[in-house]
Length: 553
Picture 1: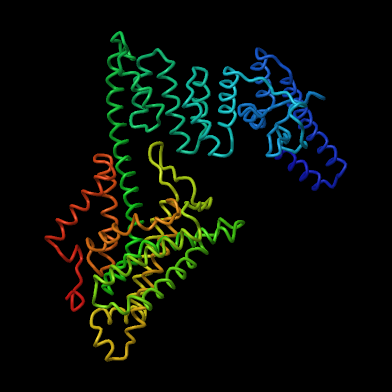
Picture 2 (picture 1 turned 120 degrees about the vertical axis):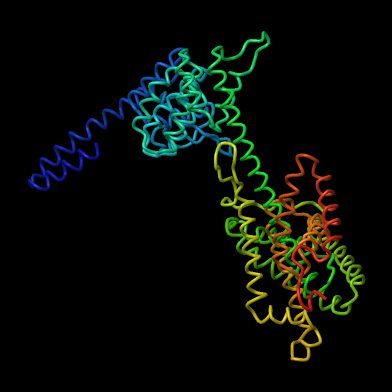
């Protein structure tokens, strides 16, 4: 109708006849007003209608309104379609926090004010009506201009096979242009044939079509065909179709197993990225400075609590809070690290046992300080909307956004740290002091301040790790305790002082741990990994990537 309207305007402009333009507008808008009135009238018939008459009314609404009736059908399916007692007008009603019902037009969505529950009556719905509504929504949205709507419609038809859907699916396949929608429509058609057709050839072709499909409905249907009932009868009587279904099941199960392995690898890399963030700071303080910092876990905890405080101070900006929390956590944990180094660590250089005992005492002090300030209870840190949900690859494989972002964030932190250590004067001084402290002093390097900045850098990275962990686990006083031992294992396994070794060690240990957990359980998997590392360092005491030169001595 829009095309006809534009054509009429262009014709009137060319001829200069504005009277003709007004006449064209009236003629073009008249069918729309009649159509809208017919749709409203058809929908109004639902008010007070008995359940036996509702399906016929819905068919009329579908015939008159087409895709415009979808919002009303969706509201009815969700139980939000009512009519007012006073004028019998059908409305969409949603209850708000105050107990009032907010009314809107079920077709246009225009607000109609608020109402008490006593002034409304719900449009009657039964299971039969719900089935009719789902089918109608699927039929109407199959012709939508939005491919996502058509994909959802195809999924709806796939999960609810019906013989009446066959002509609809065949017609949709002929006109569909989106390849993803076409594939799902073909799968839905094949599944509908498997459940409704008695033709063996058609069923055999349907099995070949769905072979390899990862849709749960397809696998359930194929399993029902090859399984026996209590009387020993197969779900599929035709032997050829049954054998084809069995072969299709093998293919589907192998694909599910493959994607299951990919999911395990993803969760392993996710765990490895957490270990990487937790171990990077330790790789500097322990690997470069030779300090056994048992308070490293508490520095991670301070980063997590900094994230919590940023969200408390900026409750209206949760979506952007992490961009503020990352530098804030780096500064807070870094300053605490500098304070620890200046007040304790600098007096204990060359005495690793004393540094271990001193930093263990500091960890207890930090834990108790957090308990005193924030209480021993866990604190809730909100996940921004852009980190919520998952990236759906297919029906059996998805990647959660929070873990995916943490993995990418860990890689970014790793490469930024590499640039700092290899392309800045601080990195040059750190490498000089770690390799030969006395020679570095002789050429004018202030080794004491380099130690403080190095320890602060490692502590700041621990704080950044706390920001990431706040999106994956509870924030509490004992947060860092769970990662301190794992961090030391990663650093020792990868090679003390080698950041690339830390990267490889963290990711490989994370993946191995996740593959072991389904077989041995979480606790035994950690024990086995620890035993492996103990045996490994017997053969390679310096780890996977040992340092070379004087630093290794």
